[in-house]
Image (cartoon, rainbow, N blue to C red):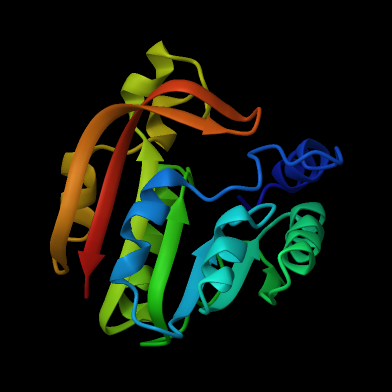
Length: 203
């Protein structure tokens, strides 16, 4: 993530006027959004062009979207304006960004694919950053996604499994943890049948 080329790559991918992953929220996030308390303080990790953060803001939540792409975050602000809501955006490398301590009612991680060494550093910080009773909402591709080729990185090590997530977040209370195949239609970046893992956990 700290590689300068990766920053440039995402700025280039988001440079088109269209939204690479669309403007509608992730289906899993939408399906569990009713678990959020009113006016929750939410951190969206690697929120890109803002579709998920803006959606949560339309529900009345206080949203901070963090991403490494300046271009993506600019489009997130534009989307928020279109939806007549406000979100805070922070351009940062999540490998080093301070998530805080007991700061968030919810942390959202949707298709945030990072190598194992970064997961080992970032995931414990996610737990620490959640308030007691705070929610983690996560969806990621599994290595089985490589058979579909409908989105996500072409590297199995960047993807997650049910077992891996159970280990990373073992100190949290799991409400939902499932691997499944489902159709993911999110702009041109994700389109078609996909293999995913979903997690809803409570600190």
